[in-house]
Length: 212
Image 1 (spheres, one colour):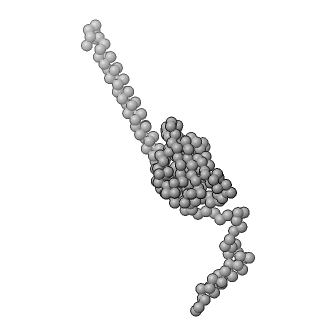
Image 2: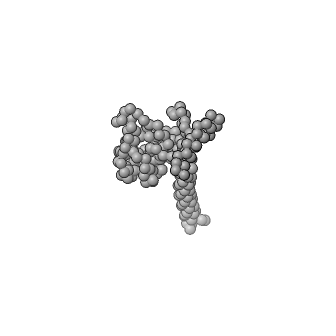
Image 3: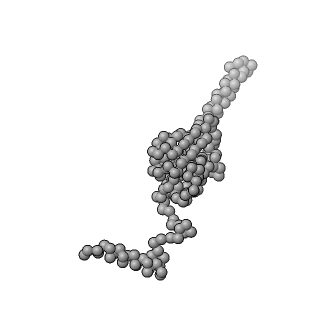
């Protein structure tokens, strides 16, 4: 029938309009910005930098390798690598970004920077309400503004963050096992050397007034 699709659409609209007075499930809009729909886990908006521990500077995962800057299609990432190293969250000396800026007015949320990062240091946020009247200032975010804790990352992307945490835990366990094996080998070498030294000293002692 001609116009059948239009009639079906009008019926659905009327059902939602009348039903919204008796059921919240029929409400198809929210009173934004006072009310906001929860973001799904797969949502992505703009990149953020993840840090471990309580200190965003010490715990920053980024080591300024600049891969994301090189691979970014709109070239909205700008990084300056530090001249020195500082201990990261686990005490390992690492380079760090002296400057890390992202121009979100240019960013197209493609997530390529996330995919190429070998350190799981850059991830996508779900915060979309970043509008401002300062086009050239407030849309250029520095590393402090971009830094978000691992707890925040776990809250917005729990499945992905759990996999990353498991990977890091496995790497830490492997490193600790390697260090323990090296320490045990060193201790065994020292014990062996001490035993050989003691044995040599005993053999050098005279027996009955005559040296052995």
